[in-house]
Image (tube, rainbow, N blue to C red; front, side, top):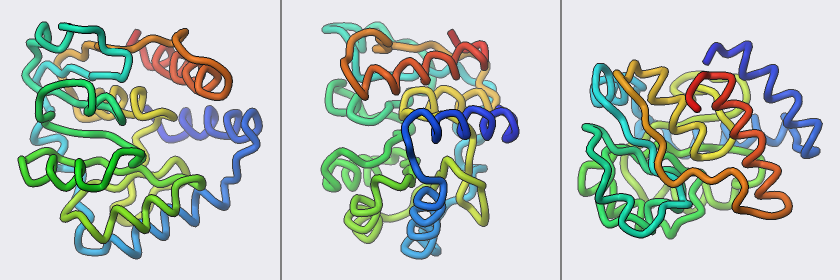
Length: 201
């Protein structure tokens, strides 16, 4: 996703939800300051993804669905990692999981892609000091190993990341844009629009 296309979505999302761009920027700076030498270059993602088939695994995963995943690279989105019995190649999250889960994933060779936004600064402070290396992302302007590939929720960010890193194909598992209420449903409607815009659904 071109940065200018994402920023167009982003300005609409800020308005729709009443989020603060300044808080998003503050969160990105916090992650950067705490991460320092832990922050990985995005080339680690390209090395793992480029030219390969990729499965994006979302939280609405049905019983037995993960066993059908045959793609070469498996990327979990947020709490989906709690529902599937596999260690993903890459895990994209804004860190709602227990930090111990993220530490375990990293030790087993999973690349963590941790997202900073205005509402998760407490999680950033809790998680970043406890883990090793990771890729940092922001939804505001990128800088110095804080990347912005585009996307709003963990799921659509994961899919857009795979496209950005030149996956040969991208399949979505466990995505249900209607199975939620209130704020979560509203977020999923934006995720659907973004994925449609990028030709991923």
